[in-house]
Image (cartoon, rainbow, N blue to C red; front, side):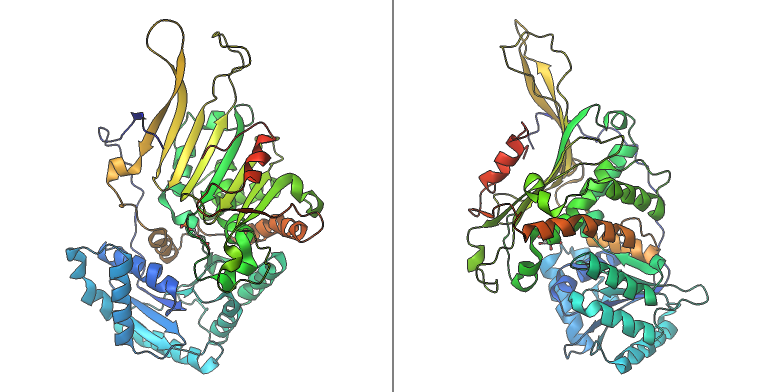
Length: 506
Ligand code: BG6
């Protein structure tokens, strides 16, 4: 983002805080506790919440996994992870012992009923000692194949039951299903044991500050919403570009690919938040009802139409990565053009684009307004003034930028585009935004599911993606093109948007 004109809130102190309530006394039970996510994200997030005084006094973490380990070794592993993956200040170091006291490791075989009974007894013991009132948040961070098994066993052990005002909730990590059929199956299995109101399907993009800011930006300001429609907006681009390649995730990624890994969840979440109608209230059902309405209004793409609406590509060295199938056709880059058939958005194209092994890590939503309807300034024949663009940047520099035309000083009527930029880091300093997992875990502990995905939302997202994946495996598939790592992606993506008379913004 360039920052020619910078606005800052430094001179205005009009912060409106919403009430932050400390969750009830509770235990968090993490399944898959020896895994990477627990080490890199979940435990650092819990520790930060603890240090900020946002966890209840009576609080425990029960770490559950298959590995043979005692609680002390687990605590040491967690401490090392926190030091590596999160910023830990001297002040926070002092809080470690108090936090570590509440960490317990419990070994299970995921399909062994006895181990769940033992878990129940452990929770009851913690409850007695710590007055946790038997409130419990289960967190599934295991390989997805284990989700139905764990949920079933929790049900059989009676651990999902809420009684006497206590609560039981479950967070389920992505991927939630592999296609519509498997997602529906999983929903059915989960619903046999947990009510929908107990289920929190996580998409960490919704925990990002700037994603939530999209809601504030749209619905706490009166000046944007009147323009937020087909009368003023020409098209919208949503980009999730990553520098990293496959890493060590071949087993999962080669069967998922970019469409399942990023489009079905993160990109569609950004898309629905950008396009939904204003909810009447800020609560979980009101918000999710609006997102669902958008998903229902997306113009479906049939398998035989995929060339018209998508581009798929692979970075050139992908097939050399360890663990991928020989000759694999898995896409690591894609473009998807969507339309929403409703009054607000009819015929406005939305270009969603994501890729791995690209030049930069950028996540950005750019809203491209229409050309001015009549140009009174003399311009050479065939030239137009660039239309206004509103960029909402989620990564790497969180903020927003509005571009508009100004007059160049001096004789004549020459104009130039300038950008008015707001950057979070100028206001709050670098690296100060909380991690998405902190926000989401706290919300789940407080019983607020607004930033989690509801069962119908997940199924509608798959309903859109399934035919595309089917098309990609059929004779209608667009040609798989290759791109060099560290570039902007395949030229096919440029040609795709240029065919509509447009260009990529980032
Ligand atoms: C994950 C995907 O959900 O999101 C990864 O599985 C991807 O492949 C990651 O790299 C991107 O998240 P972020 O927060 O780094 O943009």
